[in-house]
Image (cartoon, rainbow, N blue to C red; front, top):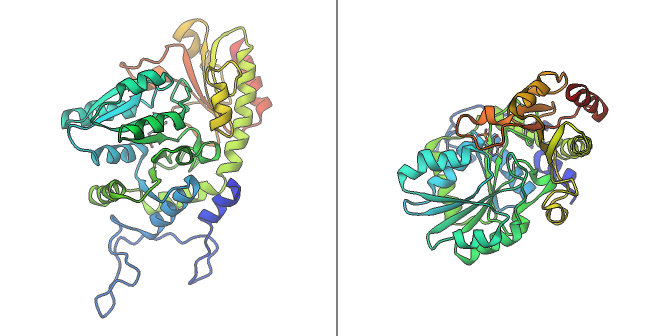
Length: 372
Ligand code: PLP
């Protein structure tokens, strides 16, 4: 089935009782038992399970081709719960370029708790191999990575993880299942910040883990979801399910515009470097053609002249909103080092762009006038 059909099949199920074409939103926190003290549909209390959340979890599993999906109140809550399912003494391998919140969780929460971790350039396969130890339980990939858009070879890295008895997790937030399906590339778990493309309108905070197999580890994660209560509200689940219906159309249109913008910026004399996997000059351009259905709608640009020039440039833009986050219908631009804070290793002249659904010509005009 093509992705767009799958996305509709996954989220469009008319209600069998009322015929409602749009799925109902179940706000109730608790569920009534009948005279025999039985629960009519196995729903007891909304923290461990809720029908609107379950509908989203089923849809997420279908989109990524997994056995089961587990939804959380944020991307960070999803990541946190996966690490909580490990044991003190376990080791995690993480890419050097990754969303800064992932290493922050490992360093500030899980290191004191007894997890160890190493960061490695995931494009250096010898280094990956050398960094996998006997106690490595998770190899965590993020591809394309944040904010340098580096690409990890998921087939090869997941094979290395499996040979060592570890699982391979892929943060698929930037690619989305429209452009990349890590479980088809032998990864074991997909992580999403559903805050981004899946909801798609910058109005929901959410996260998810999708598992290839429903095994003991998966059940432990589900148990932690219910115990800790790091769950999304029913309304947020409903909004993410609604966003999924248009995911394919949005991501393809946004990616086309991103490619146009990347081409324009790459040729501009005021630009030092463009990081975009759709440019033939990208280090992993060939791998992108094999692994992805398109390079996506995120790009980073380093302008000549340092941080001051970068900030002056974005100050002159009128169609790009100067804000963090990504994946919404409106174009955003941010001076990434300012968002990441004092420990940021991101180049100071780097601006991260999330391309929205505005017309490409208007966005190009805006960039051109600001770069003058
Ligand atoms: N992973 C990636 C790639 C992200 O970009 C983000 C947020 O920007 C996260 C994870 C964390 O998600 P959330 O903000 O929903 O907790």
